[in-house]
Image (cartoon, rainbow, N blue to C red):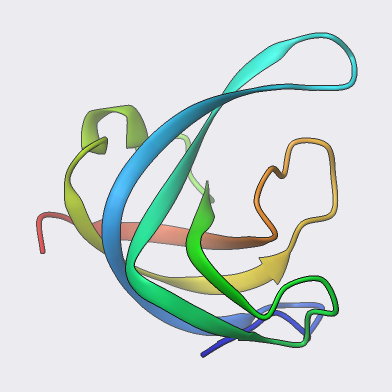
Length: 104
């Protein structure tokens, strides 16, 4: 269960495979985003838009976390889940985190 109903986000621990994608921002620029592909869909509580997700967008809290080096690898993250709010958010659920465990 992922709870995105609280403004500060709920604490979650998730395992999955890191993937990347490209998306266009409304300002015309393109950017790379990273997701964690979950082994199975997880229920989402607190969202009126989605009931379950198969991936979450990764939002590292430190520039030192190099997600590009982890694409295709299985990892574990512990962080706070929250719902998309800006044009930089391209998945309904994001997880902010300070550290990542690799490999799992």
